[in-house]
Image (cartoon, rainbow, N blue to C red; front, side, top):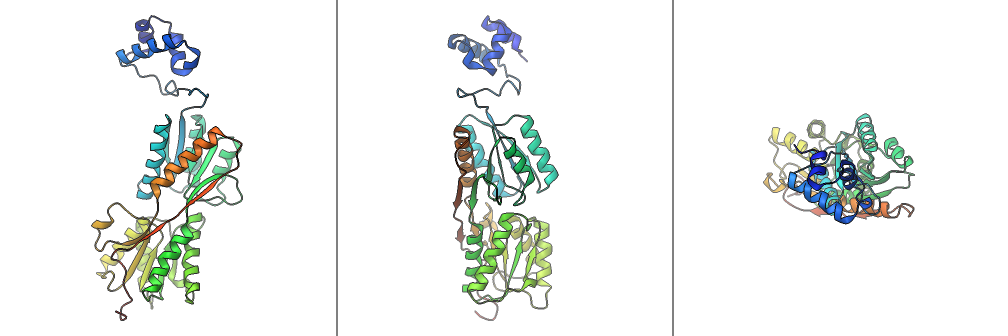
Length: 338
């Protein structure tokens, strides 16, 4: 593997000049800089990870961080892709970490990003009073919250309107004649979970349907918990005739529970899930969902972060994108009302 000294010899310059080319290129004459880069290309030289942190002409570093709850969740995978595409288009590298909704794991990820001296961080807060996000802001690192909001904190934020999405989902079921609608939400401390429950309750209230607390279950937005909570709802003396599930993995868990009981959807029970999934049309039946513009949320978050780096003193911005009700074949009237 060629070394920095090999490049220096090939370009007929000192090793310190090669180092400056990869760390502070503006301090090297353009002719010399081009000669060093040509020598590096000829030899196949790859600078060290630190050396690759080239400085742009305005003095900014070339790394941003993204801390998401779970890359295996298709929603967050699409958010990450949106962030990465914008970052690469603007010559930024991306460091990705998973928090698993765990404050300690999130803290470790944040501390690692600070050690790497990233320019900024994009993060879905794991609570509405997320202390790790607050610490980032206090350290003067640019921050953009995506998907979830903080309370009483001035920070750039990209959201999808979760309350409106939930409202539309439940209204759709109500219009089909359902009155006993089970809701399986996520972790209550997360803003999206709270907003979706609020949208669920508001839709019921607007149609004059009493809120039955026995039909509301809150979990961890994972498949297994979604299956467990669906079973709990189905075991009620008066089980729901329809389910509204709070995210895509919960939806898969609910469908697994229904399949295990040989329950026919939508003939015996209807279902609307939050978040679309790439394989939705392969499911039987394809589920009606509230789709979110996940890729756009990621790309807009990255754009907003770059804007913050260009204008660090501007007022924080909140952008709220709109979800979409995507009707497929998992919903119908309640049994006995067909």
